Length: 200
Image 1 (cartoon, one colour):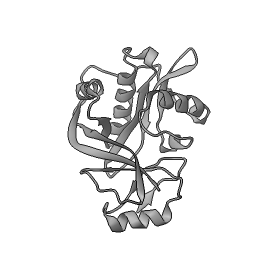
Image 2 (cartoon, one colour):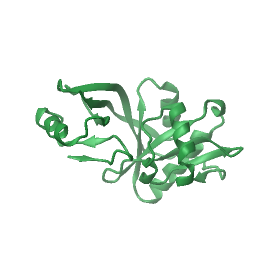
Image 3 (tube, helix red, strand yellow):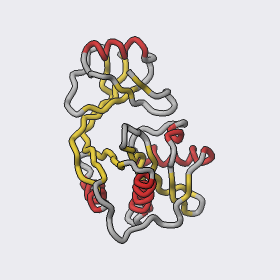
Image 4 (tube, helix red, strand yellow):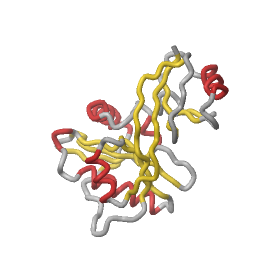
């Protein structure tokens, strides 16, 4: 079993999502902590857990680069001083869990307008040769300006330059984002079930 510190990420991992695994997890997780996990199939959650949230998502893997596109020069490397703005933006746009220490995953970048962070993206999980692009979000007042596109291109370039393979997750009903990711060289690999649970 593996899990991140509470201030970094809610995600946990078990070899098998079965009664034994959930029982072990129950013994080590603090009562008030909300945790999350991804599975490639629906999982039966034991009765001692509350399901706080559940969604279906597509896991998409980058297979080829979009020709003629490059990252814009206005992208800024985000640092600890930007954490309050990062949290405010993610609370407004809900791209997924983002906490005080989530920035420790590294390689978060953003675009600012009049000193306000209006778009950002970063990296999260690093399974094997793959690196997950995460927290892709844009302030509603700045949508349609290509900021998310530029940030994703920048992340893809960084991951590819490290000889790794970019991937990401997107809600299966977010048709606009799916269309954008496909245009940038991502293909759907599989459907994933994402659970957020908490001890009763």
